[in-house]
Length: 176
Image (cartoon, helix red, strand yellow):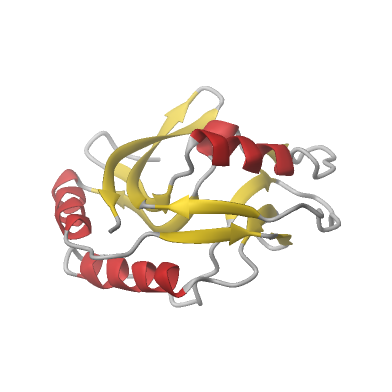
């Protein structure tokens, strides 16, 4: 549980309305059985760095560092689907990671270290989580590649609501 003095945050790529609608339409084709559930359309995103619970001063430090990230806009092809069995998550993602995404992930992680953040040790695996609580293996979904024009990244706060969580963009950072 997040205390009143802490924020639960992460940095992400946040899709525009058309990209979000297309992601949701592809995700809707994944067959589900209880207790599996789709991630609400309004929460769809691709995580760059999950920070977790931080105090407001550390969050402010991270915001300042994110503003100093230099990155270039790029196109991300979402052309693959799969699942993480252990996490019980179904996802959509890129077959190949663009260099610009890898560089953005790396530079942001290095900048956030100055605020006490420690990135995960496992290799970065960019994906959009579209299903949670999968209880069985699902077949990969065939779909035409979705080309996502990425020209910014965002800081997101995770807020508890009656139905689970709702993600709210706190700040956006442009890519040139």
